[in-house]
Image (tube, rainbow, N blue to C red; front, top):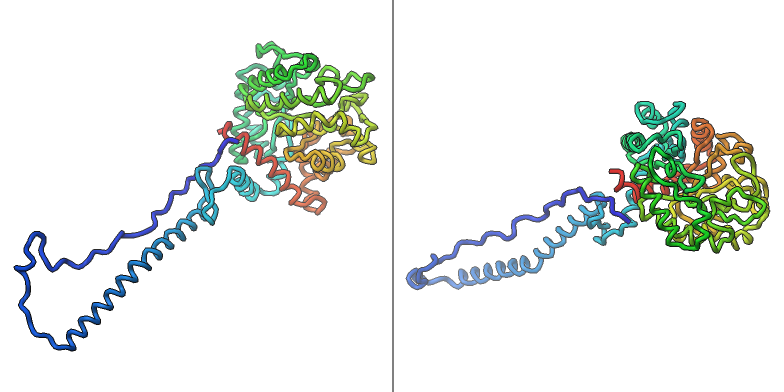
Length: 463
């Protein structure tokens, strides 16, 4: 984990003069003491007793100073240092707790996240939970640049991320300029990096590779990569994709596809999937998660809990699986477990209906049995859970944009992707919090995950 903290508080200079000056010597340096011996006079016995008593008192004070003052000075210095460490902002270069123990990087990050989330308004926190198309944010018909409209839109709803499609990407220079300006506006408005995402799996799902304006070759279908059975090749493909995306200014790629194409009656995912069994797909997914990370880009395993065996296309209508959770664990869940083991930052939850797990035909993206019970509790995932596009038919056929966003967050989702109506979805979540349907603590839980990823994995690259 990269360090993103600097201890900017100057240390206080505690302590004063090292030692007090003593009385001058009765003898001048370099002279013979005998030549300055005073004339002897007869003293009374009581005067002698007084002198002895004075000597004893002075000696006692000297002993006290020798043994007590150093302790007092030391204690004062330690107390001052402890106060300084407690009051100063934490920094990775030796920040300490009140007890004088250095904080770990994880503790420093958690402290930074808590401070940031604690400083945000409810509106700012809810806005971070949306990842949208630039057109949905700005109201512009086709966004190919970031200017005043983008800045003003981010000031109104400082969303957590923006996803771009082929129509937004004309050439390398235009893309870099648009993304850099968007990032700058987001930083200025929210004090946080913004997620800048794209769907770039390769093969049939590619916005940059194969686009003549960018001069980058398409890496091909993942089915062909999987057929080679070579995890090193899968890793290299992810590094290649991640490298050209980061060069353009993207920081999130919605890949790899972790679905298992295990239904011969369906060809929806046959080219996008690495294979037909969970055991074959899992190591490829793990290799790609590591490859994307090494290329410096965040990635997302998709589409949980696995839509490769479903018939139909969730872009158009609801899709189903009749499997139980235990049956899916034997096949479909294995690639997601591998991705989680490789520390995947995002898991995209699809719109698959699994009635034998949820008890109804609601899509997985708004089901607590899938997001919380299966993904969080059973698989132990602690990263960002994001929905698939909420503009898809499998989602919109269930309910309206506002209620979809509310139900997704209630189910345990952290980020709502591409709601059909951003303003309606955003306002619906705010209303749900204000009415008590969703607690602010539930919002904070998701925003902490989002801010953690941004400060941990993006802060150093976006400065």
